[in-house]
Image (cartoon, rainbow, N blue to C red; front, side, top):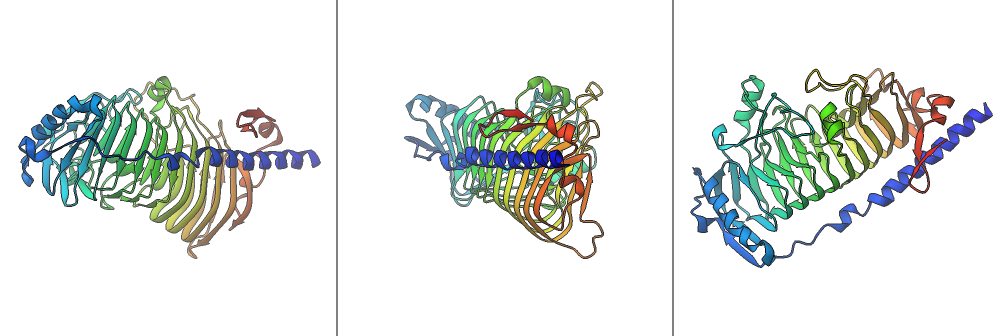
Length: 458
């Protein structure tokens, strides 16, 4: 018995130390936001014949303006200025060293005609459209293989007018997967700030295969009944900062992803080194912050701190299933305020579908080294629902300094299976699976981060 508790104490200390290391490593991610210096050249969309009446299609005007501004890429870059008005457009493609600036009162409207949205191939880490096999609609504002791109303004608005897309989705009338509002692919040094995003067809901001992405001081809104609308989705991307945002969507507010089953495993690009802080989040039918379920490239080194989660189905959720492979590890969630949440914490090893029948059911995901600390919640129905995978239990879950006011109608505060971890100062007390090691033998073989930040085996 003495050896048992010595192992338990050592694991507890290493988990605490791992959380500290991750916090220290990522705490500066949002402190290094680039300064938005004025570009030496600027043009107005009006100079290219655009009409801001909300009816005239301005896709060609936007594309001509951006093509013209390419010539300033080696001269310090340029700004495309969008004045007050309602600017209807289909899909547009940005260029490097560009600032797209929306003045106060400027509204970019996404066309409701699907022919104004280009079709593109599925992302290689997904192998097919997420909603419909085959191609997908290109997003409203796109960047591919770019660097030094800024989308900002003085509280201008980008409105996807998503109602028609939601109706097509709900009626199973889509021929291709829905578009997003903003998507950057294979790009670096991207900034999105000081804007409002409304009524996206699907995702609002989707950086995929990107590095050094900064999203801050934005507001995102989609109606609670809008199907599977998501706020910000870092996808196989690294060095990402999300700060000072207010997000309320139909499904997830923030979702971290990294590819789908065998396609994500083969592509092999994780989401890592992500810092989320000082955000206000609300998700009607999904999670305020979700990890997965498409996580086959791996998700690691994530710090979430000083966040407020309200009126959501789930607060923090970790999602995966057999066939995903990959991992979710090295996650620290700290200093969280929750109110009116159905389930505060969730971790499911039985979540999501597969792209096709070619996935490997023996590709088991790993979920480990998760720290949830300094959390307060009121009007919570279920404190935690942790359901791991029998063949690959979720391990090293660390709960600390957590207090939930549970709704009196709830009969069970915690639900656990195939998980193990530790807890201290948690009210109501968690299930025993989260109070002791899974077993001495399995814990002794569990890889943990040691004081040098490298993997150690007990």
